[in-house]
Length: 149
Length: 154
Image 1 (tube, rainbow over the protein chains, first blue to last red):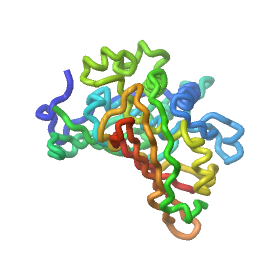
Image 2: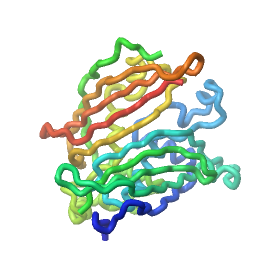
Image 3: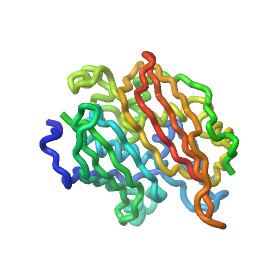
């Protein structure tokens, strides 16, 4: 198992990863795990104060999901760099209206190998990443660099 | 409005012990699972981790962020120090550069500094950007992760 440098070509796609629809419970769990207690992510009264309708997911939760997507393909120990630019906010699904809200809360991660190179005596790849919701709205773009055997 | 006099400021160094159960909790959160039996065993089983080529239980790729939130008063104290308005705050970009590995039991020192503060845009659409750089150094004095965080005020 595992991906080898010689098996990867520029233009290869990373396996597509589809998250579960993000719920408020996922946000609370992530808040506790990471320590990010910005009320933007869990407190509806704060949300009203700043004129929004719903709490929004932590950008870092989306990046964490992307990290999970990457390490489902490339082993964690091979990562050398991981970059994410946050493009839009993600609202969680509403439990009382899953059918109409699950797509905005489902994160689809895809990626493409754009470079193979040697650096620091290692064989490395760069893979560009896009995360979007199931409605096609882009949430995050970035890249990772991995050193492969 | 971010306080421009804070450009170049170095925050105090804080230490953070990488606790085993905190890794499990984080790995469950980012994989949207319910319990540890559902996650990759490298994040809770030391033997599985060693078999997979790690020297101990590793951390998920974005786990370094928790060293920021769990020390030095976390987000609230940091934005207050920088004069950033929480109501207008957006996280614009995050980057990790991994020079080594962080394992359960490591004692990590985080050193964060303000490397840039700038205004972008025109007239009514001006946004302020603050760039923070953080070194994570382990108990042997090795720089293991460098992170770059771009914050924006709308």
